[in-house]
Picture 1 (tube, rainbow, N blue to C red):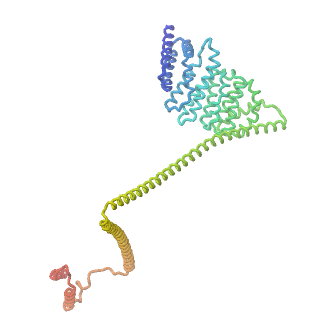
Picture 2: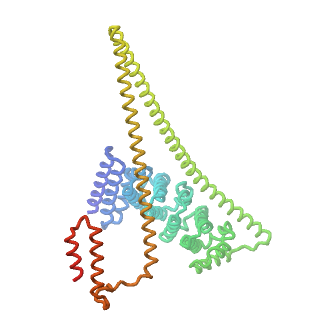
Picture 3: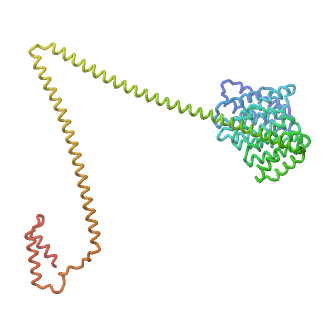
Length: 494
């Protein structure tokens, strides 16, 4: 049964190797194919009862060269789309899982000294690319977990991590989340492997302490500071006999903790770390302590100035690139405008030249025709040409004069219309004001006094009727007949 399971695993590895040797596949297709193949091999070996089958399958993956191909794909630097970043991060996780627990046998020295450092370089290179992506923080966390998982099994890679230029670029990142994930990766590595700290050399421990202390000195974020203090406390508990000799390199750390990290939500951890530091503090005189403070201040200032200089140089390169790009764009725009103006002037010149050539050709042809005419017909022909030219000139002049007259007339009419409208507005405004002033003095109009009032005699009524008739006879309406006026008057009297 065990032999059959191992043969099935070897068949899967052979099939995966055959598929990966296909040169028609691009890197993206190889990454997807490698992810599916490694998942099948690891899952089939993990679900078996034989505990040593998984180890043998990992060693077989290394011997077949599949893991080397995966590391080569990780080390590439194309501009990948978001989906391919996720597939690459999954490949990094699978390769780190294959490297943990693998026993390559007689090739162990090559595996430890050559292959594992290349795997670590590929993981750090991928993490360095993911830190600058817009949505790559979750994938960055996944890759850093793979780095920590590999470090927990192979502690000799710790020095390589700190000496790597890729990890240095990750440390120089201004994103607080990236710094926090790096510290959490070291905390998880120390927690998962109980022998991780004890297997580290003094140089590796010193580099790890420098990582935590630099974060305390440069960062002001509470999460980063709390994680750095937790990492130092974890190392202090795991390295009780080796830590006092290393603490001499970080004098003034207790004062930094008291000054910058007190009252940030983790005072208990700060108190524990300060107590650990001051418990082994050597007794020195005032002069030596002052000298150490000056030296520490100089180191901090030099580190800060170098950090500022690196940032300034980085921003300067970006600013110079932007300035050069804008200058080139402006110069290209000016050149395009000059070229367009030159073409426009050249076209105008060509039009003028062609018109002049056409006139010259016309006059030459006319001269040749005159030479063909008899002498007695030349003078009448010239007179006819003068007459036609005069007609053309007169027609153009009359047209110009009429257009100018029309424009003047239209302009005068518009001006008169504006004046009339302004005068009408002025009169209407004056009338409205006059009526507004007279409105309070008006008496409400009631029923006419002469209708139904006592005192109006028949003689008076006849006199008024006579006056109305006289007015109507004098001021006759052009639109209403006299009979209609009389009937209307009678209707009103009723």
